[in-house]
Amino acid sequence: MAAKKRQDAKRGGDRLAEYRGKRDRGRTPEPVPDGKALPHGDDDTFVVQEHHATSLHWDLRLERDGVLVSWAVPKGLPWSPETNHLAVHTEDHPLEYAAFEGEIPRGEYGAGKMTIWDRGTYETEKWSEREVKIVIHGSRVSGRYVLFQTRGKNWMIHRMDPPADPEAEPLPDALRPMRPVKKARLPRDQEAWGFEFAWGGRRLLAYVEGGRTRFTDGRGRPVDGPGGLGSRLGGALGSRPAVLDGELAVLENRETYMIFDVAHLDGRPLLDVPYRERRERLDGLELSGPRWQTAPWYPGAGDAVREAAAEQGLPGVVAKRLDSPYEPGGSSDAWRLIPS
Image 1 (cartoon, rainbow, N blue to C red):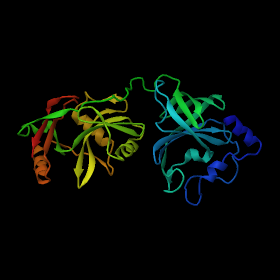
Image 2 (cartoon, one colour):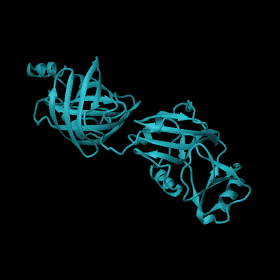
Image 3 (tube, rainbow, N blue to C red):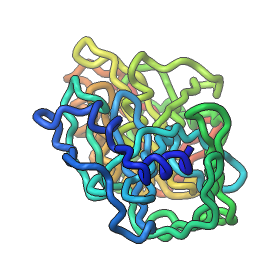
Image 4 (tube, one colour):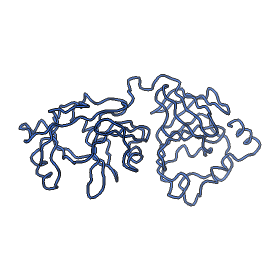
């Protein structure tokens, strides 16, 4: 495939004809050059762009003979050799696309937000119609990769080096959520506790990876998430893998996933991390969308939170010790449910 395109280019073929044919330069901010692609680089530039289109994916582009040879990678580049990821071969892009970031308008091909996730240089070890071996040197991803064709436009991408982060751990298959014990009164030493609203919703854990989301219920069983929540929440986290804990509650007549904990983030289990630090990491993710919100928490303010819960008709308050770990599968006195 790649060899044939290079031969076509040498015979005067236009390698960017398909690219131009899919775009209206009067509507899209993408670069749409007039002329044919002409080699004017060193065949060593790569870029990975995060593309929030109909389905979030990452576009890997490699400079080759005057164009960017491109693959759409739905789950991003694999960080470990244990997993291969699908890579769908797409049309060649102009070299100028390596610097492109912007919003492709609705109704246009590839509509959605495009940002540069990583870029740098690469070396070619092999380039044939069915197999491409490269060594990537970027700021977020580096190492030896091979792309190999499986059928038609479908390829796979495999990391040939050891894991980029040897200490990273995959997401667990399932966790049973930590539960509070019921108490009649607020803790006396409120300064040692954080306080959240009890939302009265359905407990859901969200496992987000590669822009996709799966859910388990309060007993750790796989369940379907609300329509549209999984893909949008996955898009909000992008390439950051995480296990989120929350409740699907009805707020203002609309189901909203209220997220109040994070049990795993960026390849690191957080079960032994104190509640205060987990909440700070969760807040740092800035998860706020049309169907999900980061639930508020209030260190040391139990009386005020309980009063506000009663005014809003919420079931109560959940008090959580600031130094408490996350204990999956059981009830712990470090978390307490106090009625409003």
